[in-house]
Image (tube, rainbow, N blue to C red; front, side):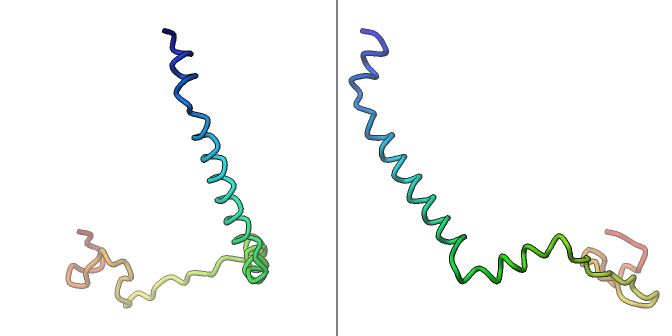
Length: 81
């Protein structure tokens, strides 16, 4: 008995059909979620992101506490754990 005979009689065609139906359902759900009319405002904002300038970060003043949570105030400004 050859492998092609075994696979031919295994009746695996149903799995391909189930996978196709699942793929189509997932595609439709994603397409509806992306193209929903209520998301137009979000897509408009996202379309402008590459054109906007990033927010400027100002350097901390010399006496300000550190903003890095890994630096504890008790260890001093220059010490790292």
